[in-house]
Image 1 (tube, rainbow, N blue to C red):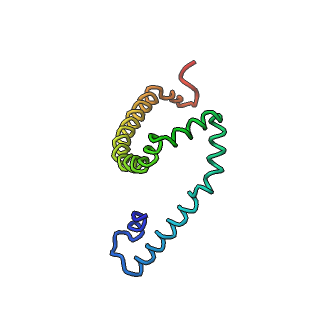
Image 2 (image 1 turned 180 degrees about the vertical axis):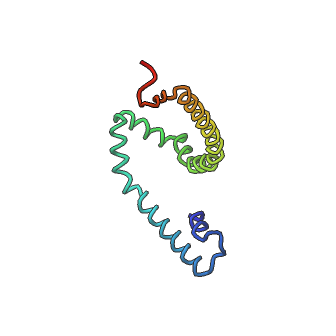
Image 3 (image 1 turned 30 degrees about the horizontal axis):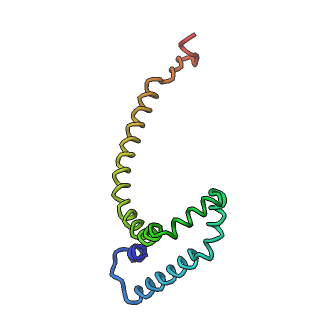
Amino acid sequence: MLAAAKQASQGKPVTPEEQKVFLKFMESSSAVIAEETAMAKLKPMFMEIYTTHFSQEEVDGITAFYESPVGQSLLSKQPAVIQAVLQGMPQRLAGMTEKLKKLDQEMRVEIKALRDAVKPEAPAADGKSLSK
């Protein structure tokens, strides 16, 4: 959300009035996110997804895992793990983007070469094809 505020200021110094607007936006945004991701709102969706993809036996096993010490450890560490993954993604995506650009350029060259090799026959001056 701070990135959005910085982008909105377009790199210009932020006045105290603008800072109040940004703070209000951040508080309002946080409230919307908290409301929309509250378990009371998400539980019906999760119930539908889990009952579609898992048997009751599997759900019982998943529940037992999350209630175990290892499951509790996973739950407590998962936010930090996700944050670390998200922080590492831009670098990974940048490298991938460059590789994909190179592949795209290579594909375009190959397609152009194929099309150039199969140029349509030019019609004769009288409008008829030169071949029989």
